[in-house]
Length: 416
Image (tube, rainbow, N blue to C red; front, side, top):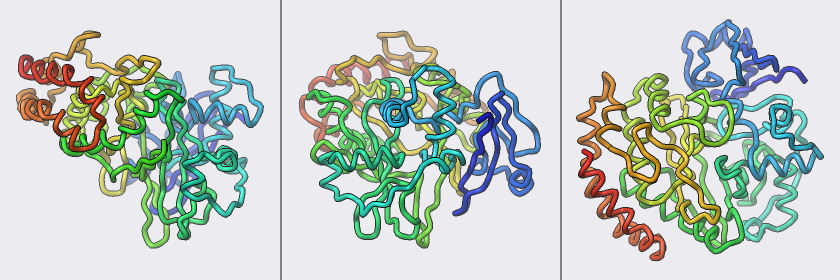
């Protein structure tokens, strides 16, 4: 195949939106452009950097949003092994995955050929216990139906995750395997990355970490549900209205920064600059992102790369998505370094927040306003140990982070 067709879900139906040729040319479908170019809604675009029009986009590299659709990490390994495809670590493998494995990624985009080549295996569904036990029948079924998705790209995404739906009887299936009218909810189910005690501790504390973030005043979705080494996460890029599934656009920060690839490669400043350029009201998103990074530093979430931040595109607004993949990753046995930094930040040192505030200022957000917002967080940072305990974070983690939290509070006070 030398060309793929991009399908986009909008207002409850799939459209043929665009095609991408392997020689790096992207063009919207003529009929699609004629219908949607006047409003040019972000949710209807294949990527925020690609306005809807009749032009042909040419790039030296793949459009970055395509990497949001390709399975990575554990999901990539599972798909390649199942189809006896050799991993070459280059665009040839990426192209194969794009053509045949991007059938049901998060967000509202998919590749038509991947849908055509993914057979739906009828199944009565699984109980919650069977999923938690990682029953071998469930693993094989999920992999065969493309339900396995990538983890964090900076750690090769080896934490197994599955995109699942619940039917009206409460049974669990791969997303895409059921008629929409019998789906009651959409989930991501996540297991420990490895078999060590630290891996299990990371997963066990992810749900409490979300509640700490909620008390900190960040944008957080529904509470997570943990039990027996399995974490159940309600998805925010799907909702059901009148028995119809509505899919919202979800584009990684890596994509809006035009970074075509995996792993670290963009700075926090670049993410903020892209949001300023592409969002109609960037101020809340920029401040939210800044405050999330304060909590990343305080709570040791070092896996803060650009694919762990996303823009959510709905009919009502386009802004930073609720928090996700927020956990005590400093515990990871492989020793993950902080993935994304501020340009004003020195490795092994905390940022100079005054300089960060200056770098983020623009006509709609003055540096002093940024500083004032951050000054309000000094007391919140100081109180984090108490908040963590109240939210159920394990005492060992609280004790290990106490010095870091104190240092960050002092750092905020001294640099603002």
